[in-house]
Each structure stands twice: as structure tokens, then as C-alpha cells.
Length: 402
Ligand code: F0G
Image (tube, rainbow, N blue to C red):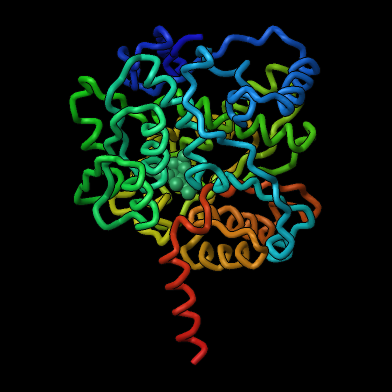
């Protein structure tokens, strides 16, 4: 395995453990080029099924169980909290609300720190430890920082998090404090916080934002686990919320590798849903523009995806195109309403996750998604990630009722 520049016109190669965050030749995004796996698809499926009876900490992780497709580390180096293994839950009221018959939620909010970020962080932190880092850092809208703080604590590393002051959920900030992170508040948006971090000297600090290709590797295993849970029967549509676009990038890479290994014969159409006030990717898609134009002042109640300048858009775009998907957006009102429906199904999620159901309802209404389509929506964060939002939403409803 090695690192490779994502831009096919450059395609520069670097050693896997070189800790680079951008291509030294062209400045582009890097990705990990995995080696073709020598096993048959049927052998892999059997191996992964057998590992469910094992007590090896790597087999108990829903990420490392699929390690044939991950960078190789000695078992003793793997930093894990038993992430993954999240259930597929059928949404009944949500299916009625969207107007489809077959809707399942893959709830990544039921991970150790309550969001999908744990899936990438287990691999990113393992790599940080492997290259002998002492300090790890990220900019965050709250979930990456909570995951970074937890996994750094497990690994015995110092965690430093850059957050937009006053703009992240207190529940998420509380998690990072609980896990012992150093918190740096930046006046401005998430994009400002990320810029501040990237301008800093990387001397002795290992950066764990989603431009870090090791995080993408962990997150891609969501699609391995999902297909495994579906007994390798591919759904028609996959809905995923889009912020910095790391997760949809990871899923696109996952599909490419699953197809290449013969584990699936087609991919679901991937629909990325942004918040309407932070929608540079959806706008680019609508306008069929060649480049992404950042949104200068992103604004949405879904603070997790309040991002104006998503870094991984090229990677995400490849996944959307290759699967025959689309990029759309949903208003705050649509997101809030969809979130309440997911709550009534007894599932719950944070606002950003509900963008998926809001997006599905829209594409069903416009006839893009047929009624009999099989749909999986990715829920990215736990309901308790943003309790203030829920309380305020219900206070508003009370006020309307009187
Ligand atoms: N949903 C939740 C709950 C998130 O926290 C994020 C991103 C996303 C969706 C979007 O995922 O960026 O991969 O497109 N949160 C990041 C953070 C930015 O710092 O926690 P993406």
C-alpha cells in the first residue's frame, strides 16, 4: 500500500507512512491505494463471518474486522474502542413520511462517542501512534473533536482541538473536556478554525481532519459492514449527509473496492444531502459547475454540517458520479421536521443526520426515487449530541400550541 495523489493528472506516489496531508507535487488530496486482495469474495465473506465468534479485539471492531482492505499494523498497536457493529434499524414512520416502502437507517451515532467519526479515528489514531506522534490535532464542528479526544486518551497522546467559538453543541464540547482534550476556540466558522490549524507548523503534531487519508480508510468500512448486514444484497439508494464531504468520499472509495473484489456487482446510487444554508456542493451540482465555490457565511441549525468550504469535494464527486447519484440540499425547516419523525420512530439522531430523511422525502416527491425502491439512510450522530436543539424545538411547538 502507498499514498497516491487523488488528481489523476498528477498521481504522485508517496510511502504509506510519510504523514503527508497533501500532495507535495501539486498540493492535491491524497488517498491510500490499497493492494488488490488475493482472496475470493466467498472466502472473504466466510472469514468476516467467522470473526464474529472471535475474541480478538480487532475482530470485535466493526472496522478492523475488514482489515484485508486496511493498512496493516501489529495487533498490539491498534487503538480501538470496539467501534462499528452498529445496527440497521427499520424506520416505519419515517418510511411513511418519505413515501417509500423500504427504508432502513444505518445508525452510526451508536458508536462509542456517538458519531461516525470513531470509525475513521480508530485507523487515524493507530497511524498517529505508529509514526510516533505525541500530539494530535483537528478542527471540528464537535464530533471529530470528541472522537479525537477519546481515541487520543486511549493511545496516551495529547489531543488539541480547534473549534468555532460558541458554534458547536455543548454536549460535544463536554465530551472533549471529559476525555481531557486541550480546547482552542477560534472566532469565526469551522472553515476559519480549519484554516488556522492548517497554517500552523506541523512540527511534532499529527493532523486528524478528514483530509487525513487514514481516517477515510476507517470510514469506508461502513459500506463493508452495511453490505455484510444486508447479506450482500445491494440497496437501490444510499442517503448520506454532506459537510466537509469526508464520509461520502469514504463510501465512494468503499464501493470501488467492494466492486473490484467482486463482493458486490453494483453500488447503490449515493445521494449526498447538504443543509441549504451550507450547500456549496449541492449548488455546484445543480449548476453543473466544474469547480466548487465556497459559501462565505454558512448558516444552518445542523451545526455539524455548517461548513462553507468542504475540502474533499473532488473525492465525494467521484463517488456520486460513479454510482449514478446526486447532490441535493434541504432547508432547516425540512431537516427539523424530519428529525422529529426519526425521533417518533424511537430512533433519534442529531439534526445533521436528519438531512438524509428530508432529502429522501424530496426526491420521492419529485419522482426521482420510486415508491418501491430499497433505501438505506446513514444517521451520523446520536440524538444526545444536541439536546439543546430538541428542547428549543419543543419549546417552539408549545408556544405555537398556545
Ligand atoms: N453528520 C454529522 C453528525 C457530522 O458531525 C458531520 C461532520 C457530518 C454529518 C458531515 O460529514 O464532513 O464527512 O461530510 N462533522 C465534522 C466534525 C465536520 O468536525 O465533527 P462530512
